[in-house]
Amino acid sequence: MRPLRPSRRIRHIHIESGALTLDYQASAEQIENVVDALAQGFPEWAVTVDGDVRADLPPLPCAELWD
Image 1 (cartoon, rainbow, N blue to C red):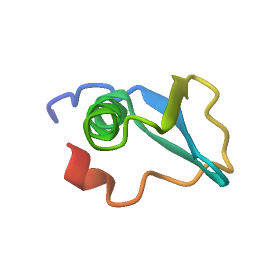
Image 2: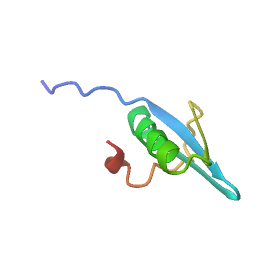
Image 3: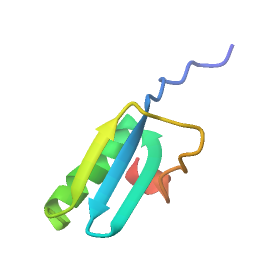
Image 4: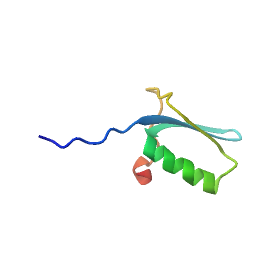
């Protein structure tokens, strides 16, 4: 029997800075790490996280870096 992997809750992250708007999907843990990093390096950026995950949302680029 294979060991159970912990479930990964997928979330939507929306990032805005001026004309730049980005939308991605990623695990809640990855998004938490991104939010923390952006708050430290780019506090003027508006970041929202919610459960509005749609099939057309691309995955967070280089998501494995945020694990």
